[in-house]
Image 1 (cartoon, rainbow, N blue to C red):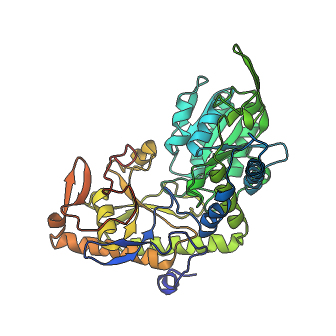
Image 2: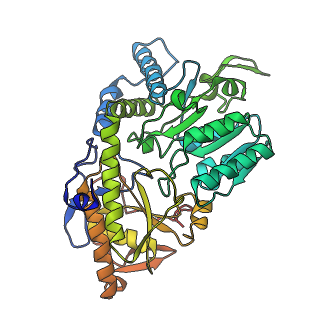
Length: 452
């Protein structure tokens, strides 16, 4: 499909979202359908996921705790969800799936179990960097090269030079959408006696993945990026380290026997799931896994690539826009595009797109400070992400919004409408009404270490 065709041919969303009919107010008084291009941060729920939660909520009860009928139903649903989640990532028969709060929680759990030094790249999201920095066994952080080939050579040199227990890498960068070839990393790591962990938070909402077929040892992901934002995630992989590790969250459900002096801990997954588990979160992820598994993987990838190419082609036609790239020889990225607008604060652009065009994008450093620093984005950037619920209208509205921003800036109109306070951009006067939601007194304006 040519770029000229992409510019004119409409592209419909692949799956319906629970938020498809959500309207947001604009500065000029109009209400428009929200164009959510921020799924790389948190994706809205699939309509089927929201329906599943509504279906099972009346049956909610304690899990692994009671003989009551609803408790038995809830326990059965929870364990079936675990099996569905494991199957979604191609778990081997001997693998274990632990339900966590999110990817960050899953990485911290794995970090508590790794019996040796970990090797990571500087391209990682903080969730796949900070836990390893705290490891008592130490961490090696490799600065990537400008090419995939050069970066792999750096990884190999470190593996040859010092023993490592684990290589931890992103399945897809949350900044550029690019990735290293997982099969080559696995081959290098296993050759030198290291296991491989893949942070699948950005990969799994965009591509099929299998532990068994890739020979990856562990994978983690979050429901809130997989169109199931109900507060759960998962760590799936080899059992031995997780069975031998200290209980990650000590409490009820993680033990077999307790005295006032000691405890006999259960094996994984119960060992690391102390307390009442998030039944609805696990069911939401399982429902999303089923929906994504039912998709034709070729159609899925073609849909996303068509949208991404449409976006990249449109951005390339705006002289003031520069797209960030990590490796000049990488495979086609997933649906994540980070860019800057010459002479414009990313926070101002994002605020303008929201207030005047009903578009949601991310601005800042994307919880990947070492990478954005290496890419020269020290002042932050903008990120747009496309996915299953995105259509060409969303992409076209973003491109039109960016052109309108540049026209308004040239006309000197922005100074009258926007102001900077405490490091955050906002409207000088905001006449937009709040949605009728209980407990919402005002729109939030809070600083974030990942935004700033």
